[in-house]
Image 1 (cartoon, rainbow, N blue to C red):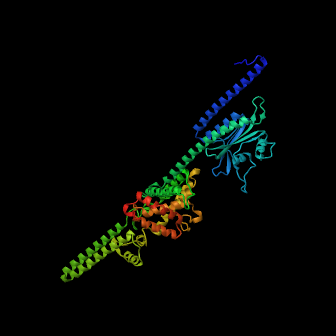
Image 2: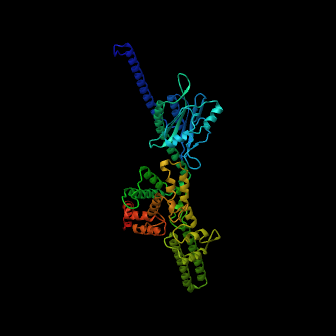
Image 3: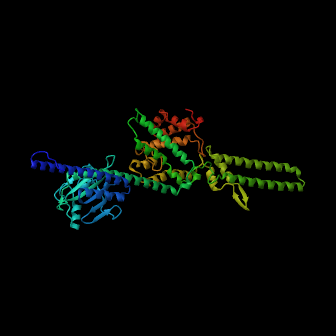
Length: 551
């Protein structure tokens, strides 16, 4: 299309040339914007990093006409840049992305003294988040290109121009770096410098790439988390307690009541603390997973309601043994009575009957004592334990063999001073905290959930260092861990669905919690906040029985 803008043909020609150049430029810009949008959609649709990363580098090289390039990704601990994809077209080098493993060591972001490693150009880009454009890597002394020069020497390549740009996610965090090398002039086939236009194009592409990489990493991490979680619980699912599920949900509810109250607090110790949505989610997940280790604890230990309970309550066996004693006593009584009648000594039968009745009464009284001892409701005094030892010596006959009424294991269990657990069983119960910590530490939590193991694994720790499994002290326990510990204890004290204990009233539960504060086990400020804000009552009205609410 030509325009006649004046009477001067030369001016018209010049103007038409300029207009054509502008038209061509606009057309190229529209085409490039369209192509970038198409690339953005393609990148967003790809969730496999092994396919996504080469795609990113390929488009970056194509748009800038670069001969080679590297995509680095930030390591999980944010201490290294890891080689992900390396390509050099002229050398036919294509490495990484699950095809040819890259054996080069990652680039450290920090030196041994902790200072930033500004000697490496990709690291400088990752640390500062700025674009770096170098005309000739052999002519600059700002960066250490010894690795590049060794590569050139070994391959006969000549690295020259370089463009390095950071890839930032939606939270403006550096997740990686795209580094291009040797821009080729399509007319002369010579290596030239990267232009401002190349920089702008690559910046747009890097932004789209970062979003796609972040999405792919998130999907990958969540998938790994789910798979690892399922793998962790698969071997122990049969040992799960029917009461654990209810407990963890209630603990999570109490913990969230506390953290939400802290968010609303405008005065006092917690007025400057605020949990955002991600932190609230992290707290909730920590609470829901704090007892995950109990799935490996035998159910008869977790739910041991009586001292003699294993898979079943062995008090029933002892009842049978007493019935055997009664049967033998009756047989002996009838035999002696028959002998007295044959001997004409009927006047002695009354004495025999009294002795028999006393023996049966003793058996009944001992059985009642054993049943009461089995419950574990009262503290076992020394005289009661001595009586147990005496009863244990009693014997009965079964299959023509003599057996003790109580074996050593039954005597040990019935002699438990308080509660229903032996020391060995208590250690099994306590071990669930270490198992929980071990299982959670094996799960690849995303960054936003990275503190779940620390919070969940410390719910049985105490400020004075006497807790378990690690014996942490106040300086080592975060506020979130203290919140979870309080929630766990409060729920356990007030729970009405445990087969091995009675539920405490609200006042009794708070008295026990306050005594734990005095002993240096729980956080005094947190307990005060819990009570003064009536958070205990808020939970009680929703979860406890009416007769328990006495505050």
